Image: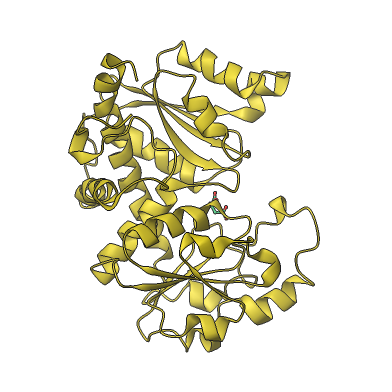
Length: 322
Ligand code: ASP
């Protein structure tokens, strides 16, 4: 599915995950996104790149920033964007994921942006439709545009990704953000540490080329980036923690724990944040060190790049019947 050179050097029809992308392909997406950052800061933010194109946001799980970000991205490029809310759709009437996808496919969208609670479901859907598909988060599996926006934020702040020491902390077990970031950061040559209680570390995760720590002070030592994750209670079907208070005491990011990291270490969080659970409010709002709002800003640029590139690749893929 990736024989041609593809638009801007990115050859794929879909963006389903970071796993399997090489550094050149990741850099192609980041470079294109970079070109949109300045445009998004201007009064006139519109371009006609996606004029005549249709993008459908199909979200089977709640989302605030990701859905809004894709909507803005599509509209800023001049596309028509439709948001499908599952609460009001025929999915509630028993239609399956694939039926829904096929129905939407018959309306000839150019891109389907899909979020679904089941890992692997977005890939399955991509095999049944003609349009390009972007994974906006599938269960605990991947959230590729989040990892890309994190990478863009890091690259802009630190000037590089290669060689940086990045700590990803908290609920790794349930986090698609962690998985996509591990793939991206290790592919781009960063050194990744995971810091979490034993119960929130997936078995065998070391095979992804990361180091595992169960102590914040040890794990954060000399880190350039401290990426906190939300405690994802909605995905927990058992007792993973004695209490939230204890979790914050041992694993919540506060200034005391941050001392071990490099003095200019960047603080990140994909949102939504649980203040006082995985991150102390003061640290989260430390505008010198926290890149949390910048991550949201970069999200729009990254999604513009992804929509533009996949749409540009679509003709070629359809001609080759891929
Ligand atoms: N917004 C991210 C996601 O959809 C992170 C989170 O929900 O904690 O995975």
